[in-house]
Length: 305
Image (cartoon, rainbow, N blue to C red; front, side, top):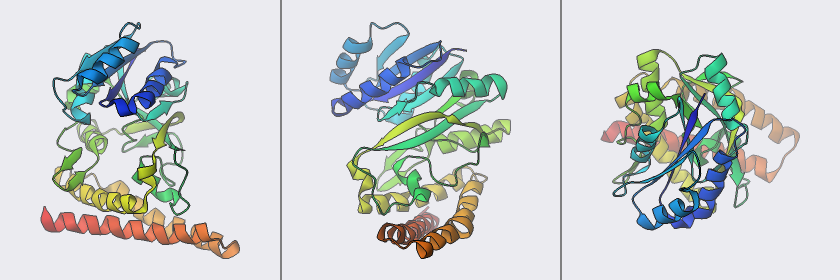
């Protein structure tokens, strides 16, 4: 099974990280891999990428005429792809060498229409001691309580997700109106919306493969408490926006809230009582701060949309 991996980039400031991502795709143990690079509108970046990768077999390098954003770039990469499966990874991520082996296994043995794996945090600037694992999703990494094991979930992260190419084309790809800033409204969830359409059209989810691992680099700005608070608020707003677009898309949020209240809170209280520590106390407080901010963002969405 041939897999086309779409990798988008747009700035030379990220070039060393881009190269690490691209090289991790080219080093996959799966035998039939194509790398499709889409540079989002910057000729200097395109020239550099093309010089380093343009002559490599099974590598395509393309450039948008102007800066279009991540989701349009991903769609264009998928349109250039020749594989049976199109997978996505970002330029701040690094794939395990067996990443695609795990995803392909889901297509060949679980009859998956879409498959994704585990997105692990790589703490470039060090892990903040106040950040609870239940909210790793704020920094773009898999959180506690995500899934118990292999099987269908609503969606995985956009830097570790794939689709049968014909299914992706039939769904029309990512909706570019979902991702990116709209004024002050930082809408998130391009892959969530696409996977909700997958569920609506095919009554299928994304097959989660825990062994298919990608590391996502967490830079210093993502560990700033104020940035995380802002992120939590706009994630709540995005969840309300997603409910408008797809009214049946919110079940996992309800399940996650129940997990926070009924499982995570008792576990953290027990751990704090049996072995008190400042980081444990910080994480318990932060868990509720972020939960409240997501809720406020959701209510702001109800009031303003």
